[in-house]
Length: 381
Image (cartoon, rainbow, N blue to C red; front, side):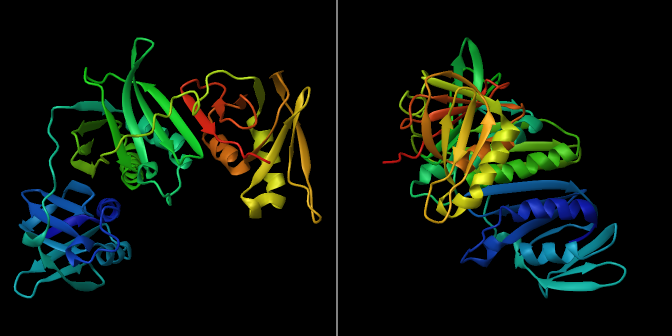
């Protein structure tokens, strides 16, 4: 194999491929990326056996061939180069890859491509089309509502499901860690078969990385295929093609839309400016950041007071204007849960919908009815 390739493009695509490499694999081959030069393109593959990627990019080929090379070493080397193009060649006898440009020369040992694992194929039976810009935004609106460390495996995955609602076909993205839950709905023209897919958080974050790259290349369409145990996203950017695939979790996602989890009727509504709320919560954090950011919110006639616990060392309160409807209420909550939501809002008005100080409350971006956030309050005995 001997190729000449555009360096900036190779760095971007090798960086994406490296996200799919196994981080702590016992098999060295799973820490490698697969590279195959054929006709006028370079194929790059990587996997950790739970998620897979295949990238096709243009290059100049002097000799065809295929190898696997350590992803981190390869990426670190090409990132250190300051050239427009580089030459990559391999020696079959010594099993050495040579990376050359005007100033330097690197040699790296490689493993034969014949030892690399096969990538799974997803049938074409079930397809939907998404906009990459919207897809990236949807993930941002739900991904913060789950922690990386959780005792329940299903709670480190995202739910993507279809639903007919108000005579409209919709796609619903849901994420939860059992303390809070975010839901985002969009209109979508999926086929007649309803579906419910649970995707790993790591996979969905890597999919977003590719979507963001596709957006930077001024392309905005993702083809999605899915089966009982796999989901695959295809990103086309002219001569660059990326296919990212992930295993699905075989589990039943919690029935989150029940009234006891996502209430529909409320006794109190609080409308306020999101920026004032964000700043006020962060003031009280100065005192509560070491106790899980718990704060107290108390409604008044036309304002709310945000306060900390009162101890023998400190106490703090701050008051901001608000529009209060119906019954007065006092409740405790993790302030970071609220600021996380505010960070994803598009509009200026934040709406709290409250049943009482013990049941979950919903938080809304006042101008976006498709976006809901549910938080469990702290029960203060």
